[in-house]
Image (cartoon, rainbow, N blue to C red; front, side, top):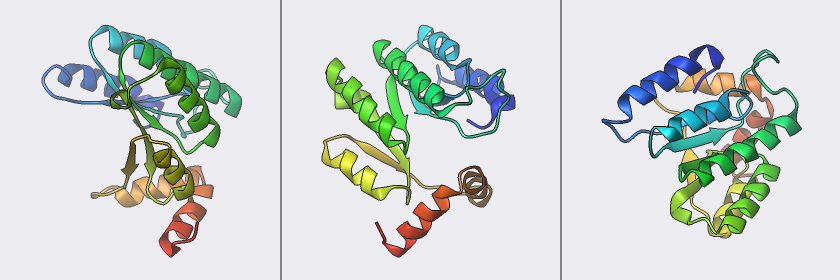
Length: 174
């Protein structure tokens, strides 16, 4: 899921193909519209979500700007998805969101088959290892294909701290 000009089109494509193919969809917690999108998608059947915070610079009219607002909305969306029986990829490198998600999963007695954590290769491997050690499934994302460089460059520009994680990962430094 890229920035907001593509959200409506991407969701429409997903909805068109979801009945014929096993697909999932990424939604972004910083977009104010996401709760409505999640409800509509779940009303149309079993849904497999990848929930991320969102990273693109968007206008305040459509996006939460403060970190705390985004975190709170992320957790509301996770609760909404789990309550509706969705499969959820909890995609975050934010320790607070990991810990709060774990509390929610435990309180709901959520089956490990209903969720997984997701992180980018090379970003916070120590946190990734902690999550796995606590018994959660983990999917590690690796940029690849013809557009890998553009994707990676955008991620680094949007969050320069990732460069440090990647560099340390390449050198085996924790």
